Length: 242
Image (cartoon, rainbow, N blue to C red; front, side, top):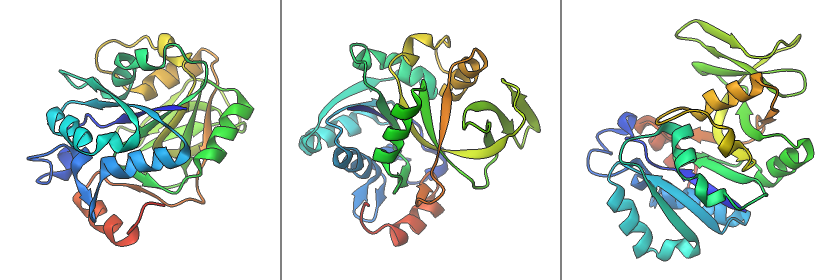
């Protein structure tokens, strides 16, 4: 199984830690976010990974070289301008072009104990275009899922905007956790150009009848390490990668 690690962001919420390094190389305890993510994927059985880079890109390339790519086959997707999640995946799409098997897409600033094997089984059983790890937790950007756990819209709380792309009698508001399992069939279906969010692609495609599922990850530990405060808390709670 292949994977992509999203590591190109500026990490503005992690300043001043990201004033002189990319967020992927910020430490939790004595390990970088990138090492934690790569180790997690390697333990799951992933051996081929592409990492997108932008902010202090050469530091990431050198870090991987110095660590022998952590025993993995790693390719780099350089972004001269930030392409967001959808544009980043589209640019790196060549890495998955010849595959029929699903791949993982994982944010570098997420740490969790989500059972990736269970998530993959769910994805394969449901034969959807993509499966998103979701939890019942507070957020400013909810995704909406119907009674079959299929994506049907989103709720942007701060903007007070409710977007429904497919009618449903029963809707659950859930928070996305930054981990996807995706069919390579998605990549040529993305119509966005330049920088765009993969969530926008999911919503567009769900509205056209494609099946995007939510995998409930409520019982697993999960942290978004996008802020200095969350890093400090994670260092105390996650002393070793699970």
